[in-house]
Image (tube, rainbow, N blue to C red; front, side):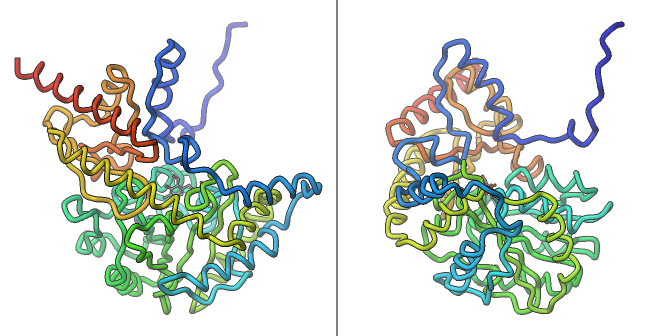
Length: 411
Ligand SMILES: Cc1ncc(COP(=O)(O)O)c(C=O)c1O
């Protein structure tokens, strides 16, 4: 019998995740013996100098040694839910009345997203997401029949929300409005006035719930992170956060959703979310213990990590200001820069820029169109977590690449 290829589902064959898709050609180059500088992935542990705090690692380890290796409750271990709720209540610039019953622990924000989309979306429903945005907000909703529509972030004004555009895209089909604060990939943050305006707009659409992805909340260089839930008196807000970024432990795969529902509009959705959570059993038990130690212990270590990240941001801003062909809005949070390619050749094909740079200079970035075909094109995202020496080397190579191609297209 001849070989017969078994077909892939349509939905799986359409999934893209730009940040890891560019790793495929990079791995090929590595297999050929080349060393690649990777500025593509938002993983602090991929670079030296930003370790997971020891007291958290110890708690994880202790949990393993004490044989806490069984399943946990589907919504998360009680102590962790309590600690998360306390953290939400005590947010520096204003918290909200979160209780442990509002908190559901997941295998990272990524799993929380899949559960939320499964619970909210039906065929034809819309999710409004900032353009540009973290790719799963485009990839996952379609698995559940939903469609992602992007509202514009203003590239020329620190990637702040274009309210006119947002308002024009609201309608009764919009079930979820996403805020990513601070934003990946732009590093933009949302001010309290902007937040109030978003809530004012959303209030007019009773079918709409806000997803507030605050996974970079403590990576806000202005120290003015605003919790969306803390400012909402009627609009339901689902806050997302976890251990991956500000606690520097993305490989643990622990995050949560916390539901703020002042007018009890989400009763049935919540029942759906709980059913879904029970059906996937639970998140990793020892990893939850590690996160608990992070939340319950002093967070004084965090400012040192933050200072290092901020210094590296400043270094990148300085280097970019001296390179022809690049322009950037100064990010105020997270650890990404969304850099504009000003040479026409690259502005029209950011993916080619990324692939050619990778092959010629062995520096790996992510193409901006992978974060939004419309609002991200003509940009690249770089992660500024590597040490200064590596960042300098990367910019030397990028500068050399830009010059070489400018000269070759002139001739
Ligand atoms: C905005 C945003 N949300 C969520 C995640 C992933 O979170 P988790 O590791 O908890 O799944 C990332 C990772 O880069 C992110 O940038």
